[in-house]
Image 1 (cartoon, helix red, strand yellow):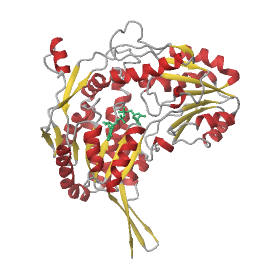
Image 2 (cartoon, protein in one colour; image 1 turned 180 degrees about the horizontal axis):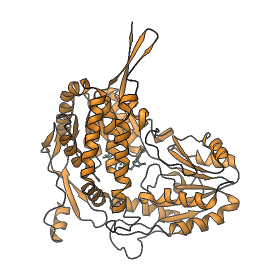
Image 3 (cartoon, rainbow, N blue to C red; image 1 turned 90 degrees about the vertical axis):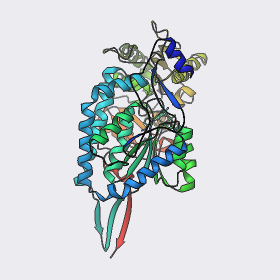
Image 4 (cartoon, rainbow, N blue to C red; image 1 turned 135 degrees about the horizontal axis):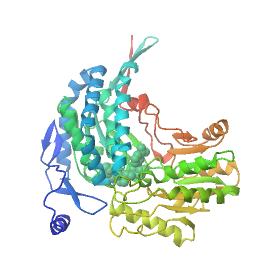
Amino acid sequence: VGVRRRCQRRGMTSSAFTVTGHWIGGGIVAGSAGTLPVLNPATGDLVAEVPAGTSADVDRAVAAARAAFPGWAATGPAERAATLRRIAAGLAARQEEIASAITAEMGSPIAMSRTAQFAFPMAVLESVAGLADDFSWTEEIGNSLIVREPIGVVAAITPWNFPLQQIVSKLAPALLAGNTMVFKPSENAPLTARILAEVTDAAALPAGVFNVVYGTGPVVGEALSAHPDVDMISFTGSTRAGRRISAVAAGTVKRVALELGGKGANIILDDADLPQAVATGVMMAFANGGQVCGAWPRMLVPAARQEEVVALAVEAAQRFTVGDPNTETTVLGPMASEAHRQKVDGYIARGVAEGTRLVFGGPGRPEGLATGAYVRPTIFAAVDPRSALAQEEIFGPVLTIIPYADEEEAVAIANGTEYGLTSGVFGEPEHALAVAARLRVGQVDINGGHWNPLAPFGGYKQSGNGREFGRFGLEEFLETKSIQR
Ligand code: NAD
C-alpha cells in the first residue's frame, strides 16, 4: 500500500507491465491473497505488481503439473526438442520487451539486457534441444537395459541476477527430459516468467507442463520444497536459502539440486600477461554490477607485483561508468534493489572502517546519482584473505586485491573460503592448467577462456551440489532405471 501511495503521488497511473495472476494449467489464475510490488531500482518507481502466492496456489500449480506429466513424459525427445526450438523462436520475437522488463525490474543496463541477458538463454535452449539426438536415453550393459526416465514434477526456484537465463537453464533440460514444472521466480525480478509462459503457450507446450507461481521464498519456495507431490527442487540462489531448502525438502526425500553462492578467485601467476589478466579480472569482478555467482571478486597477485596490478586495475576500472540503465552507453546500472545497495555499501564502508587500503571508489553514491540503488565500483588492495571482504559473498562491484608470497599460498588462499564455484588462472597455459587442477571449484577459466553452453557449471563445497548445461545438466533431471533380462 505504501508503494502504491508513493506512485500515486508521483502521478503514475498504471504500470508498464501487468501481471494479473499466476500461470497455472496453461492460463492466468488469480492469486488467493494480495500482491507484491516490483520496484525499479534506478528510480524506486513501481514497475508492476505480482500475486503474493500462498500454499493454496502452490497446491493448484502442483496438481496441474502432476496432471500434465503422463502425457508430456510419453512424447519423445525429438518432439520435446522441437518445442524448445519453438520457444526459442517465440522469445526471439519478444526480445525488446524482455530486455525492457529486465532493465526495469533489476537495473541491468539496457545494452546488456539486449545482449548477454538474452543471448545466454537462447544459447541454452539451442544447445539443450541439440542433445535430443545424441543423448543415451537407453543403453545396454551386459544383461541389463538402462533406461533414463523423467523424474516427474520439478519445482524451480531462481534468483534475480539473470532473470530469463536462470529460468531457461532449468526449463530447457527439465522439459527435454520429459518432466513438468512449477516455477517460482525471484520476487525482485518476476516479469520475464510471464512472457516466457505466454511464449510456451504459443509454442504449443501442453497446458500444465510449465506453471508459474509468484511469491516470496519463505512462503511459496518453502511450500514447494516441502510439497509431497513435488519430486525435485532445482534451486539457484544464495547458500543461506539453499541450506533452508535442503532442510525443508528432507521430509519428503526429494531430489534437491543446488546452484549457490561463490567467491571466485582470479589467480594471476608470475608468468601471466599482466595487462590482460588484470583487465579481464576487473571485468569479471564488475560485470552486471558484480551480481554474478561466477564473478571473481578476489584477485590474487604475486606480492612483488602488487603495485603494478593496482595501477592496471585502477586504469581498467575507470571504464566502468555508473549511470541510468536505460542509457545505451551505460556499463554499470544500479544494484538490483535498494536493500541490496545497502548491503553492498555496508561492506565497502566496513572495509574502509577496518583500515583496508582503498585504491578506487569507496562508500556512498557515485557523483551525480543522489537517488537510486547505485554504488561506486570499488577496489581494495593488500586485503587480508581472512577478512569479511575476502570471505563473504558481497555480490556487488567490489574487487579485493590479495598479495601472495608463493604459489602454495596462492592455491591455499583461493581454496580458503566456504565456496567453490569458479576461478580464473592467468599464466603460461601448461602452468595455469597445473594450478587449475589444484582448485576446489567447479569451473576454471584459463587466460580468459570463454563460456561453453555444453560444459557443466556448478559448485564444489557450499557453492552447491548440482550441475547445469549440456548433458550434465540434462542428467540432473532424469531417473535411471535398470531392467535385468
Ligand atoms: P536468494 O537466495 O535470496 O533468493 C533466490 C530465490 O530463492 C528467490 O526466488 C527467493 O524467493 C528464494 N528463496 C529465498 N528464501 C527461500 C526459502 N527459505 N525457501 C525457498 N526459497 C527461498 O538469492 P538472490 O538474492 O535472489 O540471488 C543472489 C544469490 O544467488 C547469490 O548468492 C548468488 O551467488 C546466487 N546465484 C547462484 C548462481 C549459481 O549458478 N550458482 C547463479 C546466480 C546466482
